[in-house]
Length: 274
Ligand SMILES: *[C@@H]1O[C@H](CO)[C@@H](O)[C@H](O)[C@H]1NC(C)=O
Ligand SMILES: *[C@@H]1O[C@H](CO)[C@@H](O)[C@H](O)[C@H]1NC(C)=O
Ligand SMILES: *[C@@H]1O[C@H](CO)[C@@H](O)[C@H](O)[C@H]1NC(C)=O
Image 1 (tube, rainbow, N blue to C red):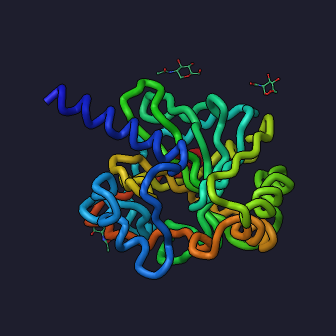
Image 2: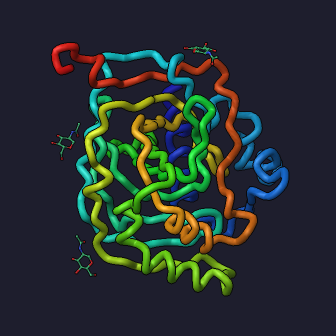
């Protein structure tokens, strides 16, 4: 049993590494036509995409989420760390050289490894889809293979400050994508993470999977309750660096299979703070 668990943990850790390291050398996939419904047949390593039972993304029904007053707030101790912007073909990703800082949850420290965007959003709230979703991928510092992803949904509106600082580099990716036969990497030095660690008064937590092959399961998701703003130009710029079959890179909603979605709500955790 213990040995099996170690193998499972190692498997998850190495699969995640593939995901983080981009897919050069791996079976490619796309979002065109029946793309996502076929992922599970493309390679043995992608089997979870079709046979998994706790897949992501899901639709979050707010009225059905269970308030959990024992959840802790989502402490994010992010730092302004050096990063590289990567067009890996299926999305635009910012990968930290070492770590973008820490997420503290369930008494564990998770290190921020990379973040990437999906347009439109993958998760929906009460069936509402948004133009953009940012997913921040963290790995447990205990090397147990545990992965935690914090997701922020964006509606059209004002400029998003985090993406704004990256605009010249995203434009550079967009310019170079026509010559794309391998992934493009642009080192961009320190990235300001202040806007990403803003305190969250409400979030949803559930256990799911990576939303791209290999669709590895047992990923803990934290979906922030507050929808942020991004300009139409910013979303268009991100999309323009990807080939047409990846410009809508949201995997369809997966069956929740009666999974429990927990709710953290600061105003309800402590009635005295209202
Ligand atoms: C970021 O990269 C620059 C240039 O390579 C280097 O001088 C600096 O020490 C790096 N900063 C961190 C925090 O690693
Ligand atoms: C998590 O990181 C914080 C800040 O570096 C540290 O104070 C704390 O001891 C760490 N906790 C664990 C469980 O490693
Ligand atoms: C509501 O959540 C429960 C689990 O907490 C689940 O069994 C049920 O299927 C959910 N209802 C809907 C409509 O998703």
